[in-house]
Length: 81
Image 1 (cartoon, rainbow, N blue to C red):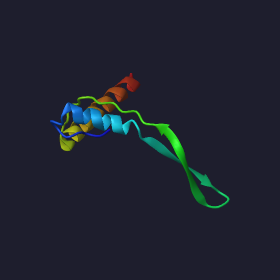
Image 2 (cartoon, rainbow, N blue to C red; image 1 turned 90 degrees about the vertical axis):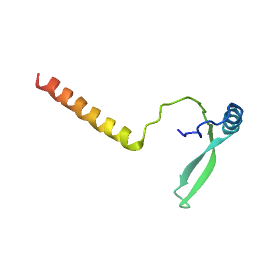
Image 3 (cartoon, one colour; image 1 turned 180 degrees about the horizontal axis):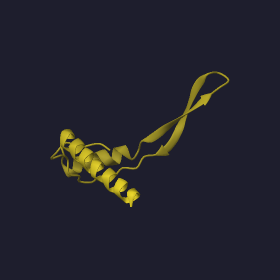
Image 4 (cartoon, rainbow, N blue to C red; image 1 turned 30 degrees about the vertical axis):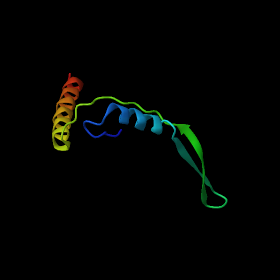
């Protein structure tokens, strides 16, 4: 998942998505006889464009930590019942 610059023009997003769809992954397999890697074309990529609410890293980590603590406490309470 990557973030695009805020305010990027729709035509630029479309061009970028179109270009990215032409890319393929590169597979690597190991040749144990020669101790080298071999490379081949893998699958194509999937490109999705979506709006997401962005938080600061610190805010997201705080919310995650607090919600995890609540989740764990709830699970522990359920197991004690």
